[in-house]
Structure formats: C-alpha cells, structure tokens
Image (cartoon, rainbow, N blue to C red; front, side):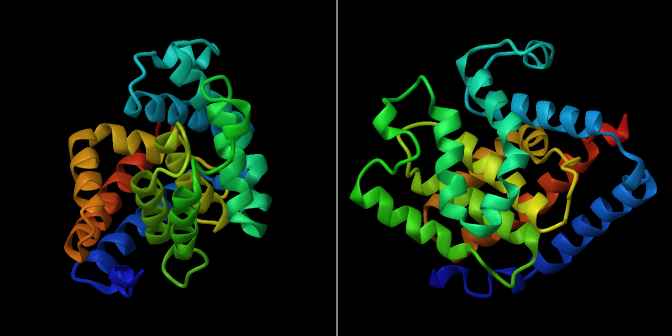
Length: 235
C-alpha cells in the first residue's frame, strides 16, 4: 500500500496521536487500572456494541442492548462484544483467522452458512489480503487500528457486517497491543459522537488519495479521544 507508506509521519498525525495516547494513558493510570473490575470491561463492550450497531443502522437503545435485546444489527454487535476478548490471542497469531471468526459471529442468521467467515469471492479475498498488509507494522498502535478499520470498511470483503467487523477489529488492535489491555476505551462511541465526520472521512478514504488517508487519521485521533471520554471509568 504505497499511499500509506510513512503516513503516520505526515503533518499533524504524529502529534495528534501522541496527544490522544497520552490522554488514554493518563485516564487509565489516574483511575487505577489495576483495580478495575471485569464489570467495567463488560460495560465498555456493551457501550461499544450499541454504538457500532447504531452506526450500521440500528435503532436499539443502550438499555435494550444491555438487556440482551434489540434489533438484529444490535444482536450481531452484542455477539461480537461477547466474543471479542477471547479472540485477542487468535488475532496476535493469525489476524485473518480472527477476522473470519468476527464475521462468522456477526453474520450468523443474516447470510448463508457457507458465506460465514469467508470473502464474498476471489476479488474480495484479494482485497482482504491487501487489508492485512497493514499488519504487522511498526506504526503506533492507534494508527494501525485506524488504518485497519478504514481498510476493512472500504474493501468490504464479507457478504455482510463489514462495518461491525471493522470496528471490532479496531478494538482488537487496541487490546492486543496493550494500548487498552482491559478494553475500557469505547472507540465505537467516539465514532458515533462524531458520526458526520466519521462517515465523510470514510467516504474520502475510499477515494484512495494520500491526503484522504491523512484526514482519516487526524479524524481518528479525535475519535479515540472521544472514545476515552465515553469509558465507564469516566462515570
């Protein structure tokens, strides 16, 4: 992906992500990360599931999702939230396998069984291989998470739920790299808070220019800061 070579060093990107990472680290440290309970992680995952579902068209409320109810999109997002942390070691070993599992979970009941976890066709399989080229990387983890998210949405390798899978994969990067080992930041809520910018920057990213990729990254630095503010640690 030539257009992404050194993208993390373009104007404003490094400083924006450094500031966001410092804010996340400060929040986790100041609130005593070691003393946090699994309930806080669970709440973060539920908030993320609901936000991700809404971004995919769900009208379910947070209370409905928390109760295990809601429309089919919310149900799919909730299933992903339940499965997500168990996939951290799989993601570290085989990102492709982890993405396949994410789609299997998200797509259950909405596509044929033989489409679950598989690219739609040969062209989609090739696009997925291209997506995985952003991993592994020496880029900062937050940058990698942002690029994986955008690449999955744009490539749309699966028959359904590509947005849900992309946002779940984004969170997997944050957990597996240790940025947010207990998954207390809610990046999906950050994207929902900034929804117009989220959607417009993804459309720009799909255009393929380096400038649009830079704009997406600058947007994501802001979204991840908003995701930290949405953490249950802030309650």
